[in-house]
Length: 513
Image 1 (cartoon, one colour):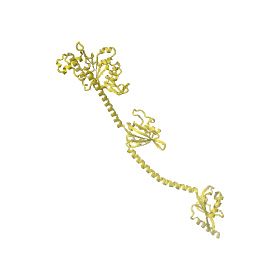
Image 2: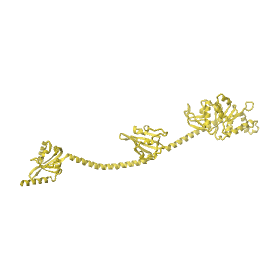
Image 3: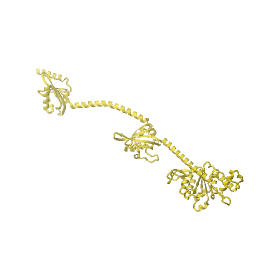
Image 4: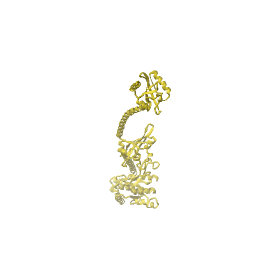
């Protein structure tokens, strides 16, 4: 009965000693190497429900001598700890532990209390704790960063949408990554239409002339593939409705650190500006052409005044003059071509001038062309004009006599002096009502009345092959012949000058003609 009572008292003492223990704790009797008491955590650690009463030394996996030295240290110092001992569970699996030991005196006997910390479980709990702390802190930071970048993205989007230029981005595969509101409005495409798609094939696929525009030839492609900044001043983008808009743009590579990830394109619609510039260029060209034409007309008029000293009226009462005047009055009010023949000095140019002055075309000055006064090589240039570079010495555009006479009268003196090959071109221009300058494909409208004169017999010239028959027929609609007057050397021009002098002195009634 006494032993039973002592055992109960000892068990109560052990339980009292373990009451405040934390974790896996055992009480060992050093004298018997027996486990006198153990917590449930200890039984769980060693995976043995019959831990109490078992031999502790069997729980040591290796280095038993180190355990003996550790126990001596505890007995000497009263407490000690170590991580040098490796324990094992009932399945003989090693346990990496930290052992904290101290000496207790229970019921007059010294026992060894061991608190065993499973380092692997401790590390797992520490990792879980760190992960939980990191996750908790990271979640807050992530939320904070997310809010920051959301605000930044919203501000950037507001800036992009406020820009007047169209802006869009492409990645290294040519897929659209973003575009602003101005780009959507100018192109007619929405963000849903373009984001993630090959934008070149949708807005930049053809040139204005209808030729296909391969992506590898596109400056934008070169930006995100070959790291090039390209500024283009005149190309076209295609709207969703199929209409082109003229644009100028800059494409710039985008980098993520050292990596080329795409390009950003900033463009503006220059359709209206380009159209205004085109109209201005056309207007300036027209002004320049009119200026050149006026200068040429002035030069021809000065030449005509200086050479001909022509008067506007033919004065006289002889049958020949009255017949000539009647022919002039008859043909001047029509647009019929006139062929004036007669010897040199018989006043053919005066008749031509009178026909023009009495016609509906008199608001414009008559343009004179002397076939014999120009070299054969320059006749084509003088008649039809030329553009700069058409031949050596052609330093600027120059209208020809035909072009200058548009809306008026062209008088060709000595038509037979024009080379046969130029006669064909002249006839073609007159019949088709259009003329092209040398070196130019552009046809210009032509409305010209032709008056030609010659001192030769054109029928013989036709037979000799020096005048084209079709040109002769075209000109000979209304022939007028200027005869020589009298038997002496005096000509019509001589008599006309005499009559003009009399008329100027009020003596027209005394004229012998």
